[in-house]
Image (cartoon, helix red, strand yellow):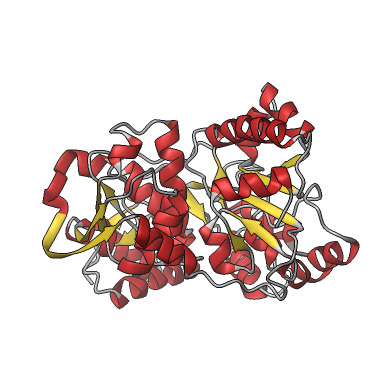
Length: 424
């Protein structure tokens, strides 16, 4: 790998042993993927995936201490993934005991480390850090050192920034030295689509289901999607961004997509169009039958497949302000039609702390609370990692949560019916 004089000096230890180790890590990481050089990180903020104070990840705390003591802190402030625990989310005594004593007992300690390393603010914990209220929204063309698959695919696709699907810890290493390896989705060539996806459904496809189908088909490749603008329009308004947030999370978790292009909608597709499609790209046609096939293929891992749901999670990734408001309206209408005043299954909507603060100032917050819905900043995935919670029959419309936990997937309409009328 070619290094500039400044980069070589850091590698040689001229700015300290710890910074040299960080540079060694970044260089070795790049060499594994064939990178021939490093490029500057140009975004204002970074994003870290490791936000949870698990008792078992002692080496992470040791590493963070070494960085802090050496003054090798992030060159950028950063946001982090959601917190794993919230006292407002339903949990019994034993579940809380496992959360607080055996799983996330180092949470306060670790958050203290993150603040010393450059956390944006005390509550900058969200997998959807790019939401306007959170403030970590990179511009088109900016180079990032992020991890968190759903955030990376959104930044690359909807914002037009440039970032590879980094692992945890690599994210902060690139931020500390200010450089990332030049390969993959950071390059022009790596951003070309090797799949063309044709949408031929008779109605607007479910975001999470469509993303799942594409992710499982193309895996880590870049898809160019045609026909979706028929349903989303040609402008990235609040509704389109919310749809693509959930769509992208499903492509990234059900496959390994780090970038997608939506014809006539996402920034690079609007600018370059079919020039983004690589020669000999494969084609995947998605119609109603294909989406149904994908839906029917999902396994049900509950011990009792006919169990009545005990909890519903919405918001993985975190819900936007637009989604919180639209779901409040939908719930009120559906509950009235069902002859109920409150949700029939304990329901948790998750969102970023900054969004939650702004949402609480609106009348929607009181209306949602009156219907019995809890709005939380929690990470549903981290909640479900508790073995006692994992045994519960939990429902969700998040394909990411379905993939990584025992939660059972239903479409938004099916979720709405269950929580307003009662579970199956």
